[in-house]
Structures are given as C-alpha cells and as structure tokens.
Amino acid sequence: MTICPRVDFLLTELLDRELKWKLWEAQVGYTSPAEFGILDESGLSLAASAWSLDLGRLLMGVGIGILAYVLPVYIAEITPKNFGGAFVSLIMVHVTNAEYELCFGISVTYVIGSVCDWRILALLGTIPCLIQLLGLLGAFFIPESPRWLAKVGGEKELKVALQSLRGKNADISQEAAEIIDYTQNFNQTSEDGIKELFQRKYALAIIVGVGLMAVLQFGGLNGYSYYLSSILESAGFPSSVGSVAASIVQIVMNICSLFLIDKFGRRPLLLVSTSGCCLGSLVTGLSFLLQGYHLGKEITPILALAGILVFIGSVSIGLGGIPWIMVAEIFPVNVKGSAGSLVNLFSWSGSWIVAYTFNYLFEWSSAGVFLIYAIIADLGVVFVANLVPETKGRALEEIQASLIA
Image (cartoon, rainbow, N blue to C red):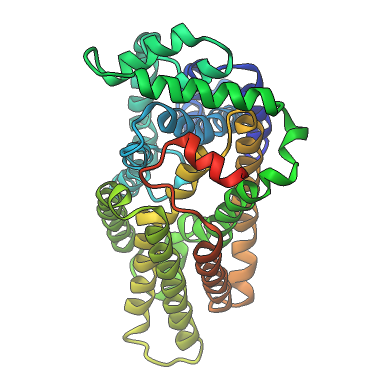
C-alpha cells in the first residue's frame, strides 16, 4: 500500500485532478482480498496462488493513494473559502478507505461485521463499488478545478467552471480575477517540480504538512484501528460490544466536526483533538498497567474502553481529517502535486510502520505502547500550538502567500 503515493506523485504531475478522480473510480472496483476468498471457496477462483491477493491489494493501494490526496485538494479548490473545511470533512466522513480509519464507512463496516459473516460483509462491499462505476457516467459533468485551469492558462475555461460551481446568477468576477492574478504572478516567479519544493521558502509549509501526518500516524491511529478487537479482548472487554460503541462514537464525532470546523477553526479543533488523543492513550495505558499488577480487575476493562473511546472520538473530531484539509490548503499551485505526494508518502509509510510494530510493542509492554502514543500526542499539542497556522475563512491564495512570505 505504501507504493501508491509514488504513483500518485507521477500522476499528479501528468494528469489533471478530474481525470485522476475518474481513474480512481475505475480502478478501485471490487478488488479486495475478500473477493478472492469468496471466489476460491465457491470453486470459482481466478488463480491458484496468492498472487491474486497481492494484485487486489496493489490495485486498491494505487486507487486509494490517488484518492487520499487528490480528493481533498479538488474539494478545497472548488469550494468557497468560508465552507472549505466543512465540505472536505463531509467527504472524509463518507470515505471508506481504512487510512482515514475513523470515518463513516469504516464505522458502518464495524457494526455490520460484528453481526454477520465476513463473506456477507465482502459481498455487501460490492454495492459502493457498483455505485462508483455508475458514477463514471456522471463524472464527465464534474467541472475542472478553476485553480488548475488558471495554472495551465485556461482563463476562459476557468470562468465557465467557476460560474457552474457558484451558480448561474453569482458574480464571479472578483474571485476569478484573484485566482488568475495570483497564479500568473506565481508562475512568473516560481518553477514547477520536486526540486523547487526543497527551497527554504517552502520549509514551513512542508514542516506543517509532514508534522501533522506524523502526529496523526505515530500517535497510534492504526494501532487502535487495526487491532481494536485484540486490544478489547486483552483488556477483558467483549470486542463486539466495544467495536459497536467505537463505531457510534466515530459517527457522532465526525458529524460534530462538520459543524465545528468552519465555526471554531482548524487549530482549536486540532488542539482539542491531540489533547484528547493524549488523554485517551494515557487512560488506556493505565488500564493495562493496573491489569499487569492485578489491581482493579473490575474496573480495568471499563477503563480501557473509556480510553479507547476518548482516543477515537478525539481523532474523529479533528486529527483524522483536518491534516488532509490543511495539506490541500497550504501548498502553492506550482508545488501542490509534488508536496502533497511527499506528505502522502510520509503518511502511508507512517501508517505501515505503526501497523507493523504494534504487535511487537504490545507484547513488549501492553501499557508502554499506549504511553508512547500519549507522549507523541502530547508533542503534537506543542507542535500545533506553535507552528500550525489558522486557515479558517481565508482564500487558498492568502493562506499560501502567508506561508511562503
């Protein structure tokens, strides 16, 4: 799965965002490992070896790697500045990609998976895939990003796209002029490409993007998500009940974030989110510490569940989606592809590292692994408070100019 951001980097430089969105719809399809398991058990196996499983995961990785960055960028570029956060958050709530973990799709999967067989669950997974395929017919009516059109010199097409996005009777003259002026000035003074990215003027934007992904991933997101059932069972709490409770918290907090992100801003929600992640990991770690000393046997399972729910709720209200929103906002148009792909690569690499190391760390110390996550989340609070800018209610051009000044 971690190779997909490299594919994303190449496609970002070569293809426009609308085409990449269509490509994602076409290639994600029904290619999950569960599909091949069902076919094999039905005597309809497409292959006698494990290569089909690897192929399915590879195709999923390529598609999701493209989606992970292109979708929030596209939404951020087409929405009015006062509603950008809510629009991107709304998309994140419905994304079924496990990399966003605490979103609506994966929450529904938790609930359904707790009451039905995995084969049925996998078959149900074909439904959104079929919807995606049908959506290809409507994708041709999706307007191109006005900012991308400005970058490639399509001023006439820009105004047509912007008018279709804002409505027939909306006055787009000022917004179109601002986008064109900013992009033209930037194209005259800056160059495209990966080499341009490593200039000093982009350092703050890169630090913010990579730093937020580091807090998100190394704060234990995939440790909780991939091993939720194992953690609950080790704590002595029924995994089916705990998974349903976690799903409910995810859905509620994600919906809350829709209404809060453009009202209170990104930084306040990130501060609350990272603080909550720190508290949740501390409580979870404390429950396993008490369990290790055979203390409070009656309360440690409840304490573990409480810590998990606090962590999940905290991620859902801010840290799960806001870093992707900000990555879509902070990079100028000339390095948006290469910078976003770099951040995407870092995020997926961190995701893999946490998922791979969790079992080893948990065996080493069931309490220690969560205390490590708590320390990282605590460092995240300091990072957000000192380096992350507020982008609420600001045009993309204003945000980017302030970061590279």
